[in-house]
Image 1 (tube, rainbow, N blue to C red):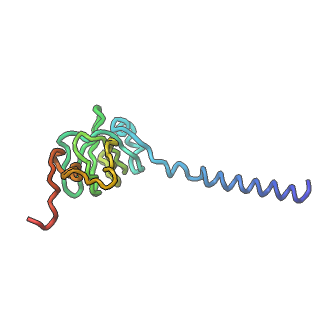
Image 2 (image 1 turned 90 degrees about the vertical axis):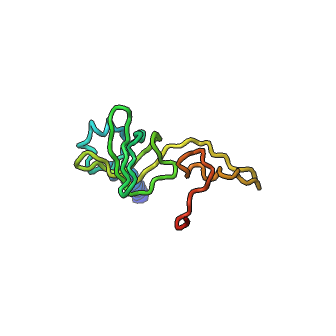
Image 3 (image 1 turned 60 degrees about the vertical axis):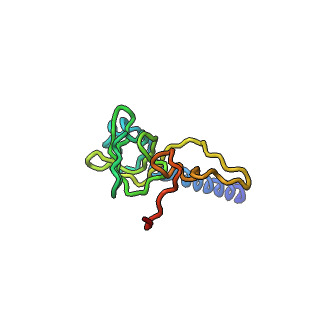
Amino acid sequence: MTSRKLFLVAAVGVAVAGVSWIAFGNLGENLVYYWTPTELRDHAEKAEGATVRLGGMVKAGSIVQGTPLTFVVTDGTAEVTVRTTEIPPAMFREGIGVVVEGSVDGAGGFDSKRLMVKHDNSYKAPKDGAMPAEGQMFGTLAEDAGTTEPPPVAGTP
């Protein structure tokens, strides 16, 4: 084999090895698993300390406002108490689908670092130059979706 062919084979080998290492190196450490409350309870020992995503519905009557925000995620079979210091999205409420990312603590609770809510795609942008109807802009911020008043501004009576 000539030195030029040997160099070409070696260069291709190094390139393949480099791309493989980038693509597959430490892949397991970067995966985030998505489990239901039932799966999380069944595999709690694997989930403890690992970063996982928990998905389910916010149980009615379970939201406790404060620092941390506490609520229960359920899949209809099992329940997991979630704690987070993150500010919840404006659409966060009881009965809505959520995905929380975090880890299981030693007591079986879930410490969340990220809170996402499921929503529909019903938003429709106003036509060019048109203004949205009064109250339409504040519908998701109000506790009662039928409320058309804007939310109070901090520091005003």
